[in-house]
Structures are given as structure tokens and as C-alpha cells.
Image 1 (tube, helix red, strand yellow):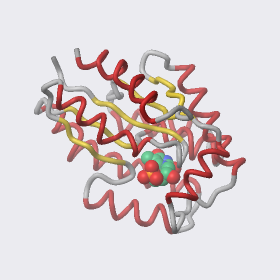
Image 2 (cartoon, protein in one colour):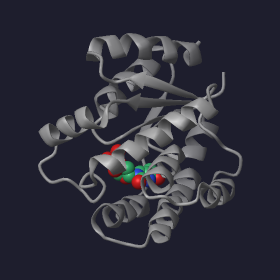
Image 3 (cartoon, protein in one colour):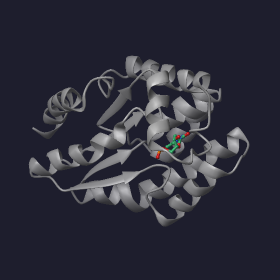
Image 4 (tube, protein in one colour):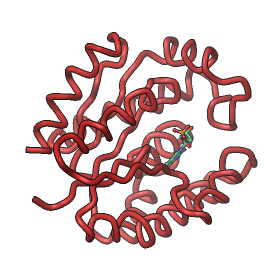
Length: 204
Ligand code: TMP
């Protein structure tokens, strides 16, 4: 079986990080090597770009281009070599986040994102994308409890996050084979039962 590329998404505070290591462990338990990585980031240059993206105010198109610059580096140096070597890749955010945040949240024309997606992905898409879906009010409560110093994105208001959430939901409806919405308002255990089924479906 070829190595799979799985991405995790959701508004800040929806709880994807809580489940990341568990999913990695589940894939390993199925006998696969797995690499856990994140965007923006995942390479030394990508992590530098992440630092700027999370701290520095910039034009929306600059923000989008830097997300894709980090992504190009990540794909070339980390994701594609891992998949070619038979290692599964579990990535905390990918291009659906650009559609949700820069497109939905900030209002960038999705046609622009599509152009960059075609250029940078060169045909690659995740095999499975898990979108952790939660009301923006509850996500904010969780964020406030977990984060002492919110970054530039986490400082955005509820309306911004409502647009981000809607964009994720719309993408899940548009790509139902690839993108699964996970109700993140449930207990961790109930969420894991759903994840178990979804991961089993790609592991076997
Ligand atoms: P994280 O908090 O999940 O690590 O992600 C960092 C922030 O970057 C998060 O608030 C979402 C944002 N982001 C975008 O706006 N566009 C993107 O393409 C990606 C990958 C992340």
C-alpha cells in the first residue's frame, strides 16, 4: 500500500493538536512509519516564515504568497521525499487552511489561491483531511484557556473565525471524499471513536 498524506484542519482552538499524536500512534500501530509535521513550518526556512507570519502585520497577498512559499519548501524537502520513501505524512494544516483563513477569513479571491495551489502542489492532494469543527464561541473559550500570548491569527474576532469555519464547512461539502468534518464539541473519547473509524478506513 502506498504511503498516505493526511492533514488536520479547523479553527484555532478546535482541538486538532489534542488528537495529532494519538492519530500518529494509531497509524504506527497499523505498521506504518509516520512523519508528523506542520504548516506554516516543517522546514528550517518554513519555521522562519511561520515566525514572521504569526507576528508581523503584512498585506493579504504577501501573507498568502508566504504561506505558499513555505509550502513549496515543505513539499519539496519533507513531504514528497517522505511519501516516496513509504512514510506516511500527518500534517497539522495545509492548503485548506489557506482557503479557510486567507480566502474565507480575510476575503481573498479563492481563484488566486487556486492558481497558487496548482503551481505549488503539482497535482498532490491529501488522501484524507480531518476538519475539527466547533462553534467559534467554544473554540475561543478553549483558546483562551490554552494560550497565554495569542498570535496574529488568534487575536482575530469571532466574525473572522465564523468566516473561517464556514469556509471549512463549504470545502468539506465540495470535496466529500477527501474532507471529513469531525464534531469537536464531543468528549475526547467520542471524537477518538470517530477518528478510529476514519483512520482504519485509510490504514486497511
Ligand atoms: P496553528 O495555530 O494551527 O499552528 O497555525 C498557525 C496559524 O496559521 C493558524 O492561525 C492558521 C494560520 N494559517 C493560515 O492562515 N493559512 C495557512 O495556509 C496555514 C497553513 C495556516
